[in-house]
Length: 419
Image 1 (cartoon, helix red, strand yellow):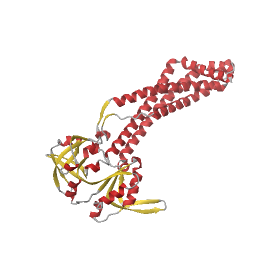
Image 2 (tube, rainbow, N blue to C red):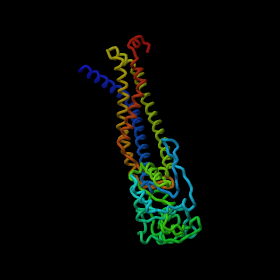
Image 3 (cartoon, one colour):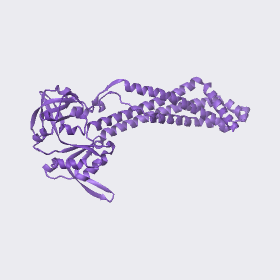
Image 4 (cartoon, rainbow, N blue to C red):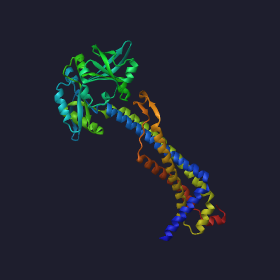
């Protein structure tokens, strides 16, 4: 056993001496590995942080599932699959939900549903003097809507209560700036049918989701019911679920149970989420190329060491070192480079990620979908462990060819002068 430990010590000592024999090249190679780790950690932390912040903003400020006044039936495609098919009734039946209270009771009784709120939603236009904007107008019951969405809890200006909301309207701060209005001003809303009404701006909200802050306004449900002549009826039920990532399953259960079309937040934001994930894939490819460059640097240094130390390798073989030990010397040298580079890279990467999260940086919602005051990052131990493992594995792979070449050097070739 002592002999085995002596052999290990011998291999480690020689590998360290070879690493230190070319200090400049070794330092540059280690820095290359460290930079690869930094790039990997920073990109993953920023990409996952932005995705997490986007999802957080969406699930906090929009209903997790929307039940719409569109009838569906389920036709059996085969014994394992049901397919939803949209059908039209009369024009009135297609656009409104009549048994509102009964339907809400049914919805809230479904497993996974936390709360439900009735709403009347329509497209329209709001105008102030010579300025106007196309928006989605949502008529809601203030106290009930707060149970399914945080938008109305993010009032930045004004003060509203359900009992004085009947003649008022709420706008996003970005939309209010565009129109040049403030709480207390009066603006006109115009529906596609031509009906219009003037309402008082009672408050401004800021959700951080650009599409909501610039394209959605809220008024009392009774205002739109009166303007659309559907008193007592609604055309949407907004629903909040317990597990946001089970929203699709809950939506399907609700659709089968009620016979109405349902849309989850995942379905509604499929294009944006897919765009974010596609961008992340491109970023990860950049990281892979960076790691490949670092691996080539390691291979280059080790090949140079092998070429310079061929005579020393032959002498070691003549003194009794086996071919396997010679190969291990160069593999351990590559492993040392990977480990040292990973430690340095993780420390620098951690400091950089924390620094990025603390730097004030206003992200405009029109370019980033969401609005934040600093770049969102996500710090996870898994990212650092993954980056380190990937870097160390790459370093070992880079050391295979030089190690095999060093192990093939024969003392007799040196003595004959053939190498």
